[in-house]
Image (cartoon, rainbow, N blue to C red; front, top):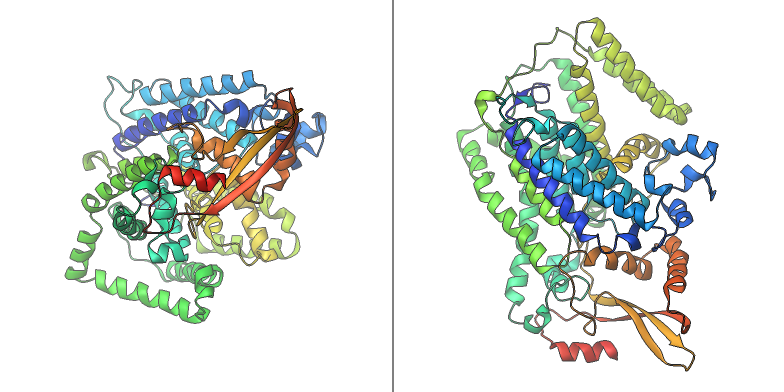
Length: 582
């Protein structure tokens, strides 16, 4: 509570607001050219197709929404005005509103309304069609926390001429914590052979699907650079959590000796989290390590780290290895390098914007949390909620979500009766909901979830889906593909001649590839061709038949694939073109 309920300098959140507004505008611009194809009824998914794939339960498989559909629509997690009006004009109006909201958010004018408009409109676009969604969760989480914060108190036209005032700290704390699943979760997922051997970056940079430039022509000379970048990526993603831990440690308020009851609760929660992690984390199972040894190893590492940090030498070493001046330049170089070398969108740069939050600004503006009455919430309240949760999950799981709301209302009423401010209960409750949803989402889902865990996970994952705050960003994990796959639409005329209508991804025979927006259009078609999005394939067939020129007698899809360029080898563009045509 000392960390979450304190107040601090508003300038870090103000600078972060400006950066995220510009990046969301860049994201919208990157998909502007393909917006009608991605999000309108004249594109890949018709109105019925979008409802069937993204919001089937909310429309009850009907084509025209009636009164009952409108009543059950809020119960789902795909909220979008484009489910009801999705013409190309509607999509471009959404984009225009998003540009205006981003401009207001960047300038800091009408910030209170601009931040919510940007979040709602950006969410409306992606809630209609998530087939090409990837990495935008970094922007969604940033927008959500900006909406819940007083981000317009600094670096804005709204605050011009006003003295700086401290703002609540907890949104920045959640955003800093977000860097752990972004980096550490991504690093843990990269346990395939291509990453272990040091070949993953080579395959990512020299394929037509991911490479931005024709690096296959110099792949032999760049092989040491690719190998070094491969291992630096792993070390960086594993090690950046140290910066987050340091930033959080610097936020800690005045320490109080913990009570025996609080120690017992913390130990029980840590033991449960460790057991779930060891039981569910796939690499532990593949290594054949007994679960109990994995749990004991984690406890031993924690004890050794705690003992080491109690010494002056241990604190000095931790201060050096976790110094932001060491990791932040490396992080900026990493993200700019990925964006420059690979055909990815602006979400890669958005993660680097989080670095603006690693400093708390002027300590003179920091204010501790207001004093709370003693025993504001007793341990019996927490134990009672846990027992009630267990009974509900065992006998009436459908009451899980209403029971959570009822318990929150009861705890607020009890706290208010003792003179506790409403904010002192709502903020920790929201943080617990968001962090629990993030942790449950990060846990692996293989093997299949048990009934009890699925019931516990359902309300938390519903919140994550509603806000598009998906925590896993498994980029090129667990392996980078060692084959190149192409989807080609072929048109046949009445005289029997066959010619390609389009080629996805851009092949050696295609035109110049754009800097922004290519990934959004190509990713969705790669998933249709090579992955498990079978539900959207009939709608893609309708789109092809609807958009094909009238002189074509038939339209067919062809899949082509060949092995990627081996590590350490090179290939000219002409040889690559011949290999593709064969």
